[in-house]
Structure formats: C-alpha cells, structure tokens
Length: 107
Image (tube, rainbow, N blue to C red; front, top):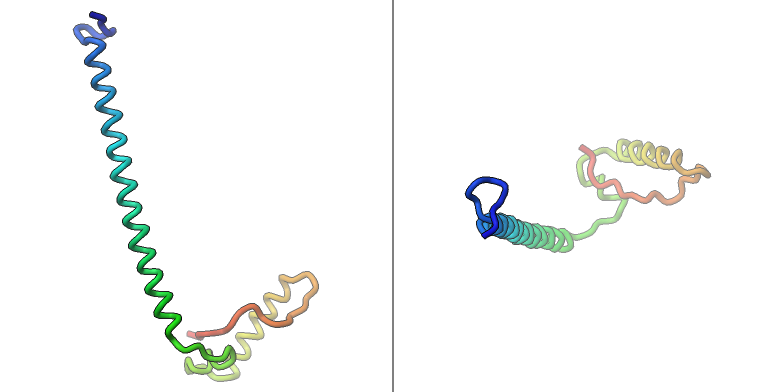
C-alpha cells in the first residue's frame, strides 16, 4: 500500500481524515444556515406584527402630529423651519417647497 510522508500513516487514513473534516465543515455550515433562516423568520414576523399595529393606529394630519405631543405651536414651527432651512441648503436651487418630512415627536 502507499504510505504518506509521515511514518506509518497510510494514504487511506489520510483521505478518511480529510473526508471527516469536510463533513464536519459542511455539517456546521448547514446548522448555521438553519439558524440564520430561523432568525430571518423570527424578525420578519416581528416586523410584520409591528407594521400591522402601526397601520391600525389612526393617522392624524401632518400639522397636528407634533401638537399632540405637548409641545407648543411656536416650538413646532421653529423646529420645522430649521429642518426645512437645513434641507434647502442641501438643494442647489435653495427652493424650500413642500418638506419631505412630517414632524411627529418633539422630545
């Protein structure tokens, strides 16, 4: 029979160790894939439940959302104007126009 470079180790034993090592690697990869798929399903369910709860809440008008949080109208106007001015600085033409946001909460 053929011998490996190490004394007393046959080629068949070397191939067997290589096959066992490959089998262990692929088994661990399969376990990781299953675990990641379980996490994906868990987070997808959690995200869907969160979206369903959010869609069931009543949607208020954009201007009244921040007023319900207890902030004064002046504070809401100042914060909205500051954000709009910041976004206008980012635009090349400087046009404020309709803001792409709704101020929902002031902490």
